[in-house]
Length: 105
Image (cartoon, rainbow, N blue to C red; front, side):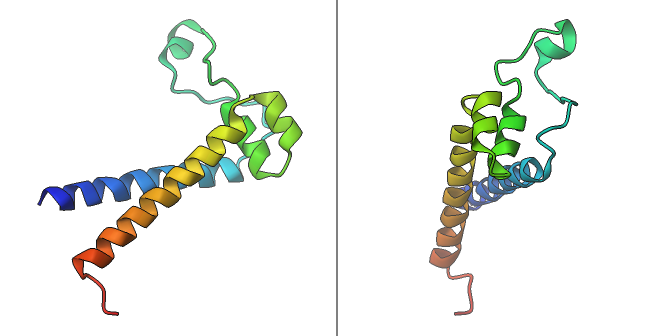
């Protein structure tokens, strides 16, 4: 039962990161609108340390590496980390699926 719960959370996390990557890769990096969940920005207009990180990741996925680095220096590293984490979780989920014998082949 415990392994099944971990398996489900792994799938949810993988789905979350893959959705985030997809949305960032489809977003317009030159958009002037910003959306944030950073509470100090919402309440007190204090800039977030991750300000423009989404734009930087979008530039990276559009192949504009210089703009990505200029927008936020950690954008490329974050994008690669999210891709790596997503593939790790999907591989872990698939391996657990195969080990449980839930396949027909």
